[in-house]
Length: 318
Image (tube, rainbow, N blue to C red; front, side, top):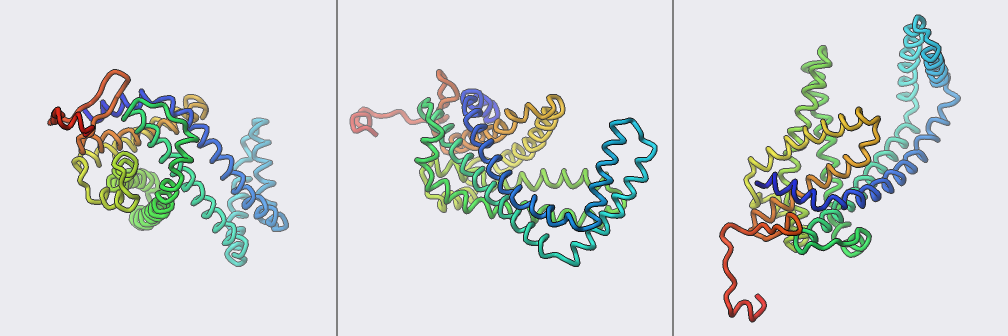
């Protein structure tokens, strides 16, 4: 039933997709600009390195040959690119200054991107909660400004936890799989994605109640985090199963959308994927804590054991 209610809530909040889309596009523009400000000077400084110039020239020749349909000489050019790339890596290892600074700059940009995306997710969750609680169509900008304090604190805590967890998973899996299956890259790539899906489900399991507890449960950011890790809301097995299967479904959905529309559909499918997970988190929290909510304009989901309000409680406004 929670999956069904999640879909109904998602449909009822579909207009939030466009609000989140505009926000994410702004984030992309900001982070792209910051990334370009780091990457472009780095490659400009490589302009005097013969290995880099040889690679760029070989790439131009390859593209020209492909356009003209001359495929016979491509292996020779690919060999040139491979040889010079190896030499370029050796040069960078001997002169790591620019590379290290640029890498640190890109890590900083990635953290900023995650911080801004977390702010957007918090705001979108607040909009969905308003619609579920009282069918209100709140303003995205208004909700962002109103919740900026809690949203920033949530993002500052969630961002490094999520980033470190993801990086650790990638590094550990790479080391293990390259050591065990170094001679079978296809199998290693397959197992890498399978393990990442399973590990992403673990992360989502322990953070699924964090946002709903802050926004719907009115808990503090730290209190909501403790509540989320206590796993009091919903069966852990069913919640993990949902997030693990959803990770696969979302990945497949976005890849098919990208291939089928040459990337155009990602404008809708990416923010819709965020909203789908947020809707489930709110539905799971409300069901587990017996909170009434709207799944559409005419349908209210009530607790199975709802207590009737007495006359005295009604008059007191309880």
